[in-house]
Every structure is written in C-alpha cells, then in structure tokens.
Amino acid sequence: MSVRQPSWILWSTLPAVLLVVAFGLWLRVNVSGPTTVDQDWLNLVGLEPDTTGYWLAVILAEVGGGTGAVICTGLLAALFILLRRFRSAGVLVTTMLLGIVLSELLKAVVTRVRPSEQLYDSLGYSYPSGHSMGAAALTLGLAFIVSRAHMLRLAGVGAVPLVAISPEDKDDAAALSTNVDESSTLNASAAVPTEIAPPLEPVRLRFHWSMILAFVWIALMMWSRTALQVHWLSDTIAGALIGASAAVLADELWTWVTIRTRSPHRLR
Image 1 (spheres, rainbow, N blue to C red):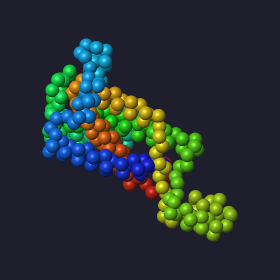
Image 2 (cartoon, rainbow, N blue to C red):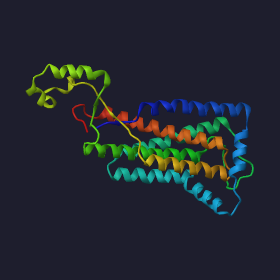
Image 3 (tube, one colour):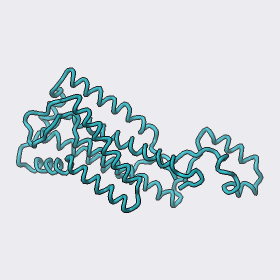
C-alpha cells in the first residue's frame, strides 16, 4: 500500500520557501536589525533571569540545540534501522540534513544580527532560527511517520481501502466491468494481468493527533528563542517554515523512491 501526502501540502512548500528567501533578501538589503513587529514581540515576551519561565526556556534551548537535535535524529534513526523501518530512518535523516543546509545557506546570505541583550549565549547570525528549524523538521518528520503507520493499521482492519483508482480511470474501469461476465468478474484480480489493470492512486495521508503535538513543540521552541532574546520573531517563523518544508519534501522524496523501487506486481 502506498500512502502519500495531500497534493496541497506538497505544493505549499514552494511559496513557503520563497517567502522565507524573499524576506531574508529584503532584510539583507533594507533592515539588518528588527522590524517593528519583531521589537514589539520581544518587549512582550522578554523574561527576567532566574525565573521559572527563564529556566523553562533555557531547558528548551538546551534540548532543541544543534547538538540535541542531531543526537535525537541519530538515535531515532538507529532505532528505526533496528526495527527494519529503513524508510522511516531515511526520512528523518534526510529531513534534518535538508533543513540544516537550507538554514545555514540563508544565515550566510542574510547575515542578520541577533538582539543585543541576550539572556542565553548564542553565536552566529540570527535569520533563520536553527532551533525552530530543527524542532519543525524533527517533530513533523516523526508526525508523518506516525500518521503513515496509522493509515497502514487502518488499512489492515479494512477501515480504509488499500488502493484507489485514479479519477480519470473510473469510467474506463466501469466500462471494463460491464463487458465481462459474472464468473470472470469474481476472478478479475487473479485473471487480469497487472499490465492492463487500471492505474492505481495511492491513499492520501490523513490528519493525525501527533501533528498537534508537533505544532505545540514548535510553538514552545519559537517562544523560547524569543523569550531568551536570542532571536527575533521573524527568525523563528522562518526557521519553522524551513523545517516544515524540509519534512514535507523529504517525506515525499522517500515515498517516491519507495514507489519506484517496489515491484509493480505487488501491492502492500
């Protein structure tokens, strides 16, 4: 069985990435520091040192840092490999690598400065936020894996169809079924060669509650980076969009590879 994302999710990555790139180029040419919205947000969520909120933000910063994200990705990928879930391992690693490459390229091009009064030591350029990117890439990558496994379980109990006929082929399939007698229809799946069967369309991925957890974690990381005054709000939004786009593209890439390498005589 093949499970693919809804087409609108895949195509939404293009405007998301273009928006992040365009805004970054605008920052490089016109604004090196914060926009008005960035400054207002920083004034709203800024923390005092040694408060409960401060230490919560620091914990999130430590867990979601570059080292933490890479370690989590490596451990999860190794676990999936041990479970012989090679596609899942490939999705996570590809997602993180793609997100890091896009994020670091933008940092080098935009060269935006960080807020001046940081409450947590951070180095490098500000746009986009690497923590927000890593949070979105890892959690959404996992959410896609969990959602796909959920769809496979539903298919196993008959709650969703294993395959769906492409809309443009439904009329042809109906005409074909009226031209065969009743006895041959009962054995159609065994008698009709795969090469002349109507084209099949993969089942589309459905919403799963794990995506809510992913968005909560992303929002917490975005809050942490701005509350500690190490990133502007627009940095975190850009990082989240880059990470989400990386997760979508990596998942679609591995789905395409899986479909291309699977035997056309076997559906599972």
